[in-house]
Image (cartoon, rainbow, N blue to C red; front, side):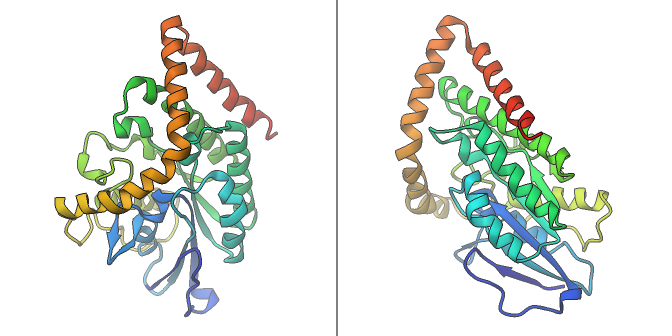
Length: 294
């Protein structure tokens, strides 16, 4: 089996005969781009690991990773979906929505509509779908309660939507949020927000298990751990001081003011004893967004 890996702006130069190909396309943000799993100065990630185990011997896999850091669900439909449809995938992974919760203009209706459009277009062209609910970023980062609670509220709403859309579009769903990210520190990278190489391999193995249970013909499962040794503490700190710091700084211009406003509102709500009311409002907003889909 061979894997042809093409990123957002690069297509595979050499392709096997069409009848021998399994075309796998991954859409999403930094999680699917592979942040946290670096090999030879490039991100690999769970989708690339899974791609190498998707087809039995004698069949080739053409893998295209369209995900990129910072992508919102609006970027799925405007940038990634057209490129994905052009590749006529038989299998497509769509993992997104986490970045939406980190933006000041978070709108669960918009997030719902973008995810529904993306999943619907892909499944309508014959692609089997992979989806996942995402872990709460506030819990991963161990933020104080006034910051963590509003982020958790938003993430619950997104995951509620993803669960409903998984059923609507008959996708294969991984309960990624339930994996032991906080209990097993080795599954997280130095930034505590993205999986480590080991964490990416765990995601790939779980998706492989779900595909096997669903009856898809597959190759051997991914390894439980990467063949490469984990990065040293010095390498982790060097990454955080360069790339990681830039990643956080790029989001702080939009995220930090919004988070501070959320924290202030949350603190006021706690004093009034009305935090439960905000939870109910977000839950109702997610339900309305799904109802509007018809």
